[in-house]
Image 1 (cartoon, rainbow, N blue to C red):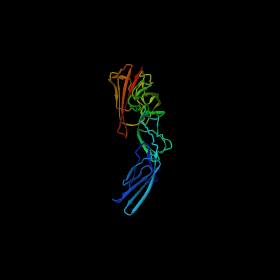
Image 2: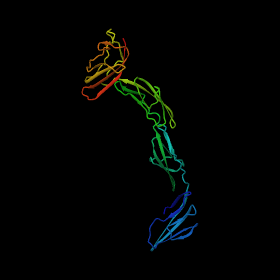
Image 3: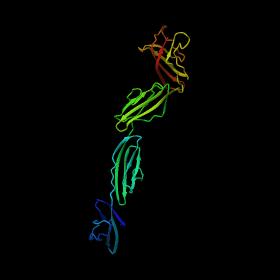
Image 4: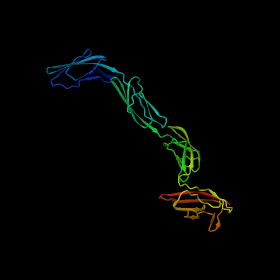
Length: 307
């Protein structure tokens, strides 16, 4: 038997003999508080800090052992399930200073910091008294997915999207006026988003959007002046690559086609069937496939005609 047998205060204290002896073996327990108790493998402790003796007679063999019974303070644990916003972090405290700790994370300190959702447990040991408690931690993604200070898009990208992940019930407000978690940007500049939720409070973040010319980029003007002064009289894209397929189409506000060409050198002079087109906004659509590539890229936008 161990020299000391510990129990948690408030628990039933029972000493039990674990060894197996012959069928006809006899046992004798002895202590001041219980006197002598015969032929049982376990007894209930009455006094603390008392020494209990056991004698076993098995055939011609006699075994004698003893143990001192001590009662230890039971650790008090009260970990509570928690929901918090990502980035804030959470400190789990097992309290009960001076005792031993074993966490599900393999840490052995009284406090640990957690940054991820999950189920955590801690075992607190006070000599012979052990208690275990568990806690569920849910980390919300937060209202903000942190942007880098700058985000770049190719001019040719059809969908230039800024996006944040938000938890249900989060209010979103962009400086563009949008209340959607994602927006499509068309211009360079600084964009900010403000969000508000019960768990995360109010948060803001900003990002500067830059547009750049990427490989095989097209430079497409947004206006031209076909007034025959030999300056900006034609609308056409400036190409930087060779194409196996190319098509440009220009439509008026009623979606009538006023110009189309499959030539990379095609230019619109602001006329339709020889007649001058009115000053207004037109829509262009350019389809292209680079040489050595089979992916079709579609670019579209608006152009203004001035005379």
